[in-house]
Length: 269
Image 1 (cartoon, rainbow, N blue to C red):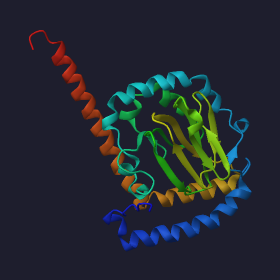
Image 2 (image 1 turned 45 degrees about the vertical axis):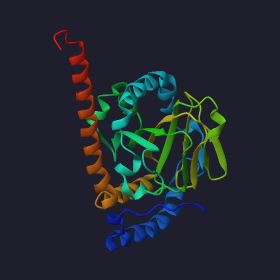
Image 3 (image 1 turned 135 degrees about the vertical axis):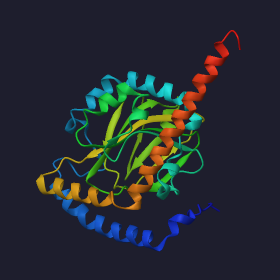
Image 4 (image 1 turned 180 degrees about the vertical axis):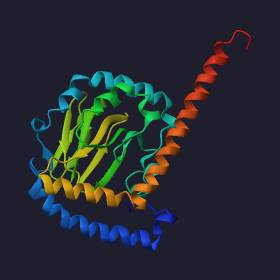
C-alpha cells in the first residue's frame, strides 16, 4: 500500500485552504485566455527556436556546472524544497529534493548569487525571469505527478550533473518523456501534468528557471496582475521568509568551513 504524506499542521488553516481552492478555479479560467494570447505554441514542450536566450546556457553550461559543483560542497546546508515552499510537502520529502535558489519571484538572492556569479549573470539575460535554482534530486527519488500554477509562466531545464544511466533519469510532461543530458536545455509548460523519476543510484542536478510566457499585451497585463495578487498570499510570503533563512544558514555553514580550514592551516594550532 502506498504511503500517504501528512499535511503540515499550519497548512490546515481554513482561510489558507479557501484561498488555495478559489485560486485554482481562477487560474483555470485565466489559462484559456492566456493560451489565446500566447505568441508561442501552447504545447507541453516548446521548441527552443522560440527562445534565442537559451544559447547562452548551452554555450556556457560547463561554467555553470563548475559553479554548482562548488555549491554542492555545502550540500548539507542546502534546504529541501518543502522547507522553502511548505505547500509542496507532497512533492518533496525529507532531503530527497534540494533547491539552491538564485532568483525567487523575480528577486535575485544576493548571497546565493555570489556563490554562482557567472550563472547569475547569464540568468540576467532571460526576459522576465521569475525563479531560478539548482535543482538537486536524490538517487531513487520520484516526484509524483502534479501541475504548475499558471500558464503565464514557462519552465526551462538545463542538464548539469546527470547519472551515467541517463535514460533512467527522466521527466514526463503530459505524454512526452525526456531524459536529461548534460549541456542540453529544453522548455515546457508546467501546467501540463508532469512527474520525475531518478531510477539510478546517482544524484541528478539541473538548472531550473521560470520566465514569463511570451504573450500579446492583454495576456502580459493579466499575468502581471495575477502575479502581484499571488505576492499578497501565504503562498508567496512563506517561501520569501524561508529563502532568507536558507541563505543565512548556508552563509553560516560557509563561514564555519572557512574557519575550520584556517584553523587546520595555522601552524600554531
